[in-house]
Each structure stands twice: as C-alpha cells, then as structure tokens.
Amino acid sequence: MDSSAVVGDQPLFNESANVPDVTAVTISYLLCIFGSFLSVLIMFGNLLVIISIAYFKQLHTPTNYLMLSLAVADLLVGLFILPFSVMLFVSSYQHLHGLLCKVRGSLDVILVTSSIWSLCCISLDRYYAVCQPLRYRTKINVRVVWIMILVSWTISTLNGIIFTLMAPDKGQENKCAAFQAKSESITVCASVLFTFGFPAVTMFSIYLKILMVAQKQARIIVSMDKSNANVSKMERKATKTLAIVVGVFLMSWTPYFLSISFHPLSNYAIPLHVLQSFKWLGWSNSMFNPFVYAFFYSWFRSAFRMIITGKIFTDDISNSKLF
Image 1 (cartoon, helix red, strand yellow):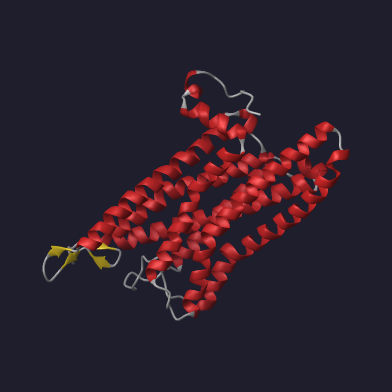
Image 2: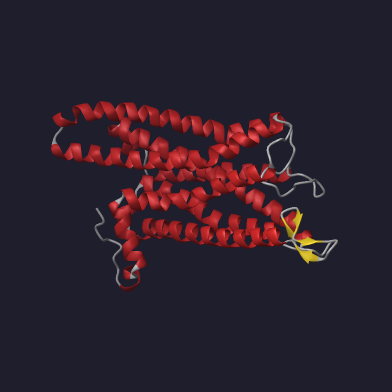
C-alpha cells in the first residue's frame, strides 16, 4: 500500500522526489480550517434552535416541531458529514477510504433527503395556515406533525439504504468524489427527480399558491377585526420567513443536483472540483437557517439570548413569554 498522504485522489507528496507537494498541503490545511469552522457554526446555530424549541413551552407548536426536525438534520450534517469529508480529503490511510466513503455517502443522502422532505411538510403546514386557516388546527396538529416527521425520516433512511446498496465497488475510480459513480443517466435522473426534483416543484407550487392567497388577504385585511388581523399578519410573516428558508435551500442545492443530472449526459465532462464545490455549497446551507430565524423572529432572538447567557441553567424560565 502506498504510504504517502493523499488529498482526495491526489498525493500530498511527490513520490519521485519524496518531498511534499506544497500546493496540495496548503489546500489540505485550508480545507481543514474551513471545514472545521463551518462545522462549528452549523452545530452551534442548530443546537440553539433545537434547545429553544425543546425547552421553551411557548415554542411547542406544530410548525416549530417541523423546524426542529430540519434543525436536527442540519446539526448532523455539521457533526458527521463535514468532518468525514475533511478526513477523506486529507487522510493518509487508504484502507479507511472505502468505509468512510460509504458512511459519509449514506448519511449525506439520508440527511439531505430528510431536509427537503421536512421543508415539504413545512410548506404544507403553511398552506393550511394561510389558505385554510379555519381548518388549520384540525388538519395540522401535533400528532399529524409527528407522523409527517416519521414519514420523512423513514423515506430518507430507505433512500440512504438504497444508495449504500447501489454504491460503486471498492476498486472503482473516483469512489469518494462528490458524484460517486458513473451510473446510468436514467438511474441518476430518476434519483435526482425523486430526491430533489419532485419535492422542489411541490414546494414552489405550494408557496406560489400561498403568495396569491396572501395578496388577496392583504386587500381585505382592513375590513377584519383587529385580533384576526394580527393573527393573519403573524401567519403571513411566518410563511414569508419559511419561504426564505426554502428559497435558500433550493439556491444552495440546485447547482449540485443540476450538475449531477447533466454529468452522465455530458459524458462526465464536468470537472470534479466543480461538483465538489457545488456539494460544499449545499452542505453550507445547514448553517443558514438559524441566522434566518434569528433575523426574522423576535422570539427566537429572545430564546437564543437566554440560552447563550446561561439563564436556562440558573432559573426555570421554560414558561417565559417570548412573544
């Protein structure tokens, strides 16, 4: 076995001269720093969201439970996917690559699929909240939401298992690339359509419908009584915020899914570093949501402040009024 350290599939050392490849070493150090920093940001931000929703009783709502599921998936991306990716990039132990690659690949598929199906459930929640407010509490309750979450994670896990079973053989080239196997174009397109295409179109259609209804509501809001008007404004603000979350997710992941769809059709002409860059852009999405919540939701800002200052550890403030 070659004992020289490697960066991806490229050696860190010039074997003929037995000296380090300075460029490769520099890239590996920079990736370690960037990956570590991004991983910490993702874990810290999503941990704040998870603790806030779990601890403060006022945040125990169906919508927030769906956001909790999304935050868990994002947290696991920072906890496992990014560290495994950095290890694969700089590891000198080739015999670990096959195992790490399969584990990273399976978890990646599970977490990305879980995120996008959680966002689909959130869009459905927002549809009933804005378009059918009178039926919202009967259609979307805590029991229904937990069923949604269970179904989302079940679909994601099955998708990850299928991915593992269809993973390339150990000896196949580029086995740990951003796009792992030179699969049949039909298989790749079908996978992308199920994992990303169908949910993305569904979310876009639902939010387009919500936008049309919200505009109609805005025209008649002056004729509503004050309490109902305030409720309507809160629901529309929540919908706008979560639509931004969906939009950021789609912008982060669309380049990658489009590129791997066209990759087989282009006879694998897309450079590997382009695919890898798009994949890192997708993973970076996991750090955005906590910032969106903090920017648009005053109650999340209040919850974050109490957690960071340690108030939840000194007093029982779980019943605090956040909004």
